[in-house]
Image (cartoon, rainbow, N blue to C red):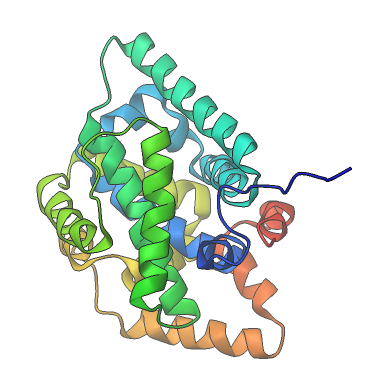
Length: 256
C-alpha cells in the first residue's frame, strides 16, 4: 500500500515558513500593519464590525491564526481556511449592504507581502530577489483563491503597483487618530511607544510621512538591544515588552 504524499499550501523549505514561523517576525509584521490599517481609506469597514478598535490585540492573534493555518497546513486545509475567511467577509458585506472595494482587499494582501519581507530583513537578513518573489507568489496564490481580481502577475509588477496603492489609498483621518488612541489604551504608554518605534523600522516612507513619524535613531537602538538579547536567550523578555504579560502563552504559540 502506497501512502499519498502530503501536499502543502506552502512548500516545507519555503522562506515564507521561516518568516511566519517566528513570533518576533510576526509581531513586527503586525506592528507595521497596524499603522497602515489606520491610514487605509477603507478603515471605516473595521469600525463597522468594531472588532479591531474594540480589541486590537485579540484581533492580532485571531488574524495570525488564520495566516499560520494557511502557511503551515496541507493544501486542502488551507483552502478551507481561505473559504472561511471569504465567508466572513461576505457576511459583513451583507450586514452593511455594501461591498468591500476590490482595492481594499488587494491593499491588505500587498501589505502582508511587504511587511513579511521588511520584518524578516530587519530582524534576520536581506532576502534575495528569488526569495522575495517566493513571498509574492505565495500571497498571490492566496489572493487568487480568495477571488481577488487584477493582481500583479510578477514580483516586479507588484513593486510598482504596491507603490501606487500607497500613494492612492492611504490618508490620515479621524479614524486613523482614533485607532492609534485605541492602540495606546490597550497597550499602555510604554508598550505604545515601543509599537511606534517598531513601526518606524518596518513601515514604508509613505506611511511614516502620513504619520509624521520621528527619525529612526531610537528605533534602531531598540533593534540593537533586541538582537543582543537573542544572543543571550533573553529575547522572550523583549517580546513580553511588546505585548501585555497575559498574552505570554499566545506569543509563545506563534513560534512553529
